[in-house]
Amino acid sequence: MSDETVIVKISEAVAVTTKALMAVGWAEPEAALQAEIMTAAEVCGNNQGLVKMYQPQIMAPAAGSSKPVVERETATTAEVNAMQSPGMVALKSAVDVAIAKSSGGVSSVGVYNTSTSSGQLAYYGALAAKAGRIVLITANSPEFVAAKPGAKATFGTNPLCFACPVQGRDPFVFDMSTAAIALFGVLTCKAKGEPLPEKSAYNAQGEWTTDVGDIHIGGGAGAIATMGGHKGTGLALMIELLCAALSGGAVLGEVDAKKTAKNWGHHIICIDPGAHVDGFAARAASIIKTVAESHPDGVRLPGDSSSAIAKKNLEAGTLPVTKKVWDVLLETSAKAAAAA
Image (cartoon, rainbow, N blue to C red; front, side):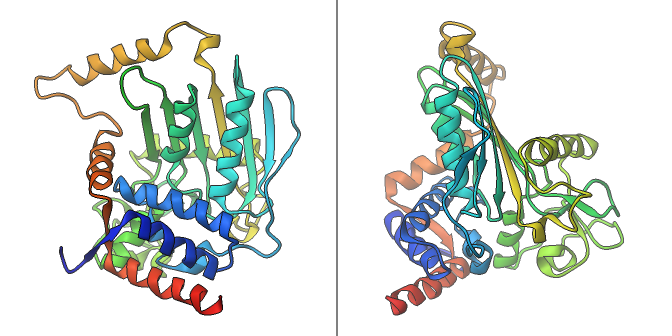
C-alpha cells in the first residue's frame, strides 16, 4: 500500500460515507443512496467516487430540500422537479420513471431544481440497460468550463452516458465528460497534490496550465477546457440545451450564474428496443464483438477498463482510497456519531 492510499473494505466505505453525508445534513435514506452510488464509482476507479466528500459542504443539502416530484406528465414524458434533493436521488428517481414510460416505445424525462452532483452517469445507464433499455443520459452543472482559451466559463463539465443491453455480457456503457477533465478529477489532483493533465485547463490569461490553483476549484480565475476543442464545445452546448432549455435547468443569460441559481438539469431519453427491432441485444453483441476483434491485439472498448478494475475490487471486497479523502470521511462521519 502506498503512502497516498489506504485499503478499505467496500462495506466500510459505504457505511462511513453514509454517516459523513448524514453529518452534513442528509437523512439516512438519501445519505445511503448517495453513498452507494459514490462507492460504486470508486469500485470501478471512476473519479466521481468518494472524492466528492473531500470538501464535504459541496455535498450538503440546500435549505428547504425535499423529495423529487413529477410534473407536466404525459404517457411518454415527464418533468421531475428535484425539489433541491440530492442530484443522485433525483436522477435515480427520474431514470426509474423513464424506464417505466418507455415500455413499448420511447420516453423523454427532464430533471431540474437540484444543486448537488449526480455522480457517475454510468451507474444509472447500467440500471436502464439491465432493465432492457437503450438510454442516453445528459447532465449540466455550474460554470467551470470555457468554450475556448480566454473565454469566460459557461459550461459545466456536462457529461453524457449511452448504455444498452448486450447479449452474453454486461451492458455496453459509455460515460464521458465533455470537458478535458471532470470536476472531481480536478478535486482528485488537488487532494493528491498532483498537477492537472496537460492541456486540460486554462489560466486567467487563456494559457494552458497544469496548476489547480489557476482555475475556479483552486481559487483562480481560469477554467477547465472542453474535450477535443470545438467538437467538445459542440457536445457541451448540446447538453446545455437539453438540460437547461428543455429540462428546466438554469438558463445561461437569464441568471447571474448557474451556481447561485442552484438549478442544474438532467435529461434522459430511454428506448425500448423491442419497439423497433427483434433481437437487439444479439445484434449489439455482434457489432461489439466485431469492433473488439478488429485489431490483432484487440480493441479496448469504453467500459472495459473500469469493468476490470471493478471485478478485481469486488473479488477482494476492498478498494483503494486516497488517504486524504478517507481522513476527511472519517473526520466528518465522526461528527454524525457524536451528534447521535
